[in-house]
Image 1: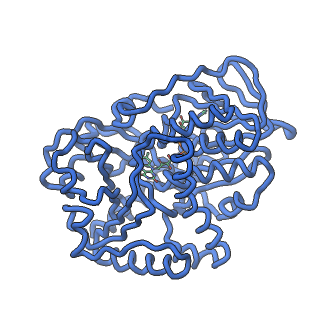
Image 2: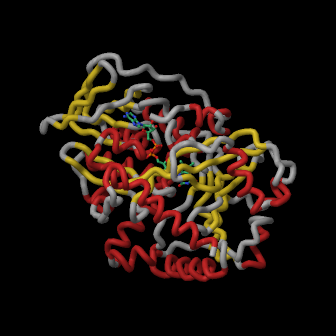
Image 3: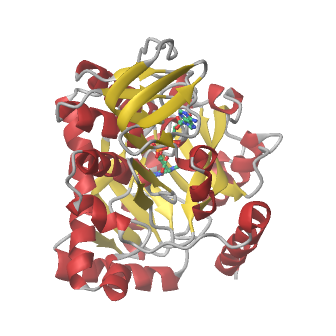
Length: 424
Ligand SMILES: Cc1cc2nc3c(=O)[nH]c(=O)nc-3n(C[C@H](O)[C@H](O)[C@H](O)COP(=O)(O)OP(=O)(O)OC[C@H]3O[C@@H](n4cnc5c(N)ncnc54)[C@H](O)[C@@H]3O)c2cc1C
């Protein structure tokens, strides 16, 4: 496992709601469903299973929200990495409609959780995708028109002359504003889900790293530390760590390191981002940013394809801030942290079943909303209802070529190529 030091200096950890650290698994236990991973996917699955009357144990190797869920940009971006125009062309209308219903429906699932469980996670409405090049704006407008015409999802086209309603900086060539998107404090959402799951009866164990589950046909055994548990079904929700638990799944994703900072509170924050929307630009290696509840700029920019963090994360991200907001070139940075984004070959989440086990990983930077849905679909599958789960499980996926040793360097070459194209 990666060290927890790179999470320690996150704005989210510093402003987390209270959470009592849970004990490790310390005796042999059994349950209907065992869940591996305490991020959005695992917590949502745990809550949904418990609400269906199943007995549930959740094993988290470190602490709730330790992974991407507790350290992401907090951008709530409706849909997937593909436009619905591309999904329609690839899968046909019937499947595209089913994918749309689920992926865009995830927005309401997250909002419902926040409202129903009173999760204090600074949720705000509004997301803008900002065009880095005029050609990107042309594509965005076509995609938005298609989405509205064929799927009834309306988002606002923001012409270049109006972009200042949302952002003063960056020189963007227009964008798409989606009032149903938004942003939130991701760690507090995860902790809120965990509390709701516990209330519903889920047994949560932290510092309990699961080993590879053994499927005995009638049940599955999982060892964590000195103890073992037995479950009828297992849900693997360990995203970038999935390959450690289920080696046969490892080459379906590669981890891409991504870094975030939070500035000191900014007196002129409302001038920089007047509508308080979350902003993501349209490049392959994108800049994305938003304001926190206390008016800090939370900014993510740049990627690294090796796991070792830059020696100075603030300096690494600062150069991207200065590209967008030159006046913030020397802004004080109070927090800097990073995490691994699990990316699949086709940038769509990889979900599936192996015997009594279900898995979902590789949300490819679009996980803040879709993970809650993925957890619920796996809970349905554990109850024997496969139809909605199969909408995603039937999406074809390829492994990154190169096997255990070469897949990461080869994927890196491919990603560098796309990053370079944006600079041309
Ligand atoms: C820096 C960064 C910025 C991002 N920004 C955005 C964004 O703005 N918007 C967006 O939509 N998406 C974003 N993402 C992606 C999004 O955060 C993820 O897709 C999502 O959080 C994945 O959730 P998860 O629950 O599947 O995995 P995770 O949150 O990674 O949870 C997996 C958990 O499994 C645990 N685990 C691992 N191995 C074991 C084991 N053996 N036993 C028990 N537990 C184990 C880990 O400790 C971890 O807590 C970002 C990701 C990163 C890293």
